[in-house]
Amino acid sequence: MPKQEAIKRSDHIAPRLLSYEDAARFLAISTKTLRNWVSLSRFPEIKPKKLGGKPVFDRLVLERFVDSLPTGDSNERSSRQRRAPR
Image (cartoon, rainbow, N blue to C red; front, side, top):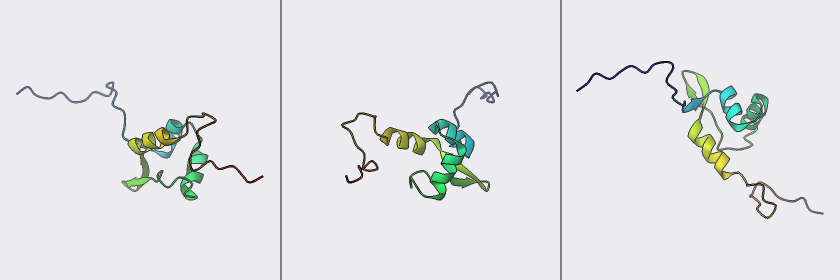
């Protein structure tokens, strides 16, 4: 069996676990907004895990969250978007 080559730094592997900064960039929001969402439990599905004592976000969870967002079609509403009574 051939010896496996070590992964070179130049090889691109998408990280699964993201820092606050990278997770915010992935979601196209500011780090401050993400920190607010987490501290207020705005979206309970977006909750950091701990790795080596540092908070990290699972990219797959973030992808599912993005997939669940409304498309912007005015006829489509999510349970998070409710009209205020008139």
